Length: 284
Ligand SMILES: Nc1ncnc2c1ncn2[C@@H]1O[C@H](COP(=O)(O)OP(=O)(O)OP(=O)(O)O)[C@@H](O)[C@H]1O
Image (cartoon, rainbow, N blue to C red; front, side, top):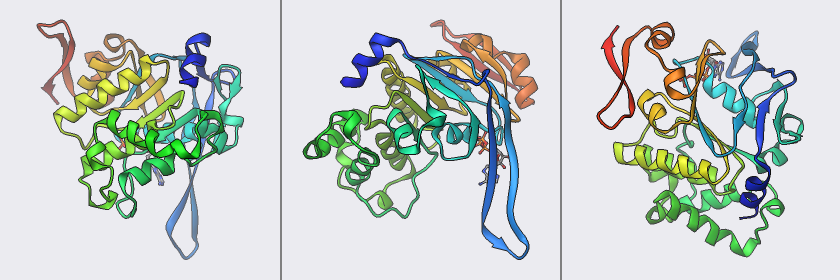
């Protein structure tokens, strides 16, 4: 593909910067607005810096509930207001209008709304056509084939004609993943893609995540399962209270001390008989 050639030649370096700072000013607009309580304004992430994320690698973003993981991904994708900069090669994605940003970077939300009355393939085609197809070198006549190819890759081609609103939670999650990858973005942000999946599909999605990265993409994936993160991520970022508390290769980032500090749980990190590091829970 066009993107892959570009990526393999230039070794994209992506970093959040303006002296490596990203600041998210999160403005909450209540849908249940009442009386004199117009908009709550909350700052979730302030002055956060990320290490460089390299093409070809998977970065797992882990941390307790409400740490700010989704907020960070949503800010990076432009769904929440944020200041700072986010450089992909020479381009600052933060400065790009949303449609242009979406041609470089896609975000998979935690869930697709249940009331969308499209078939799976229609939903994937709509994601493909959400912004101009020019950068993708795709003709309108090819979108159906591309969408079907993506469904095949994700392993849900048999669901192509099923209405989204009749799928199980896990099936909907796989459809959401298909929507995120169909444009073959350089940067893929996945928010808990395995949370509703059975063991086989968790493995399938993590293998796919890894394969997508190896093709030259930058993949950031929010995970709650530390063992999935240890097994599949090249680096792990541990987030707590809107900041990165620990980062590095899996065994550097995830230690019993860090887990105790962040989750208040006692664990051991041990290698299994095949040499894979694993988190073993001892208790609170
Ligand atoms: N729509 C919203 N309105 C107001 N505050 C919000 C909203 N969404 C998230 N927040 C707040 O932002 C903070 C970070 O939430 P966020 O969803 O980013 O955390 P998270 O690390 O992804 O959590 P989880 O693991 O539970 O999904 C929390 O304090 C949360 O209450």
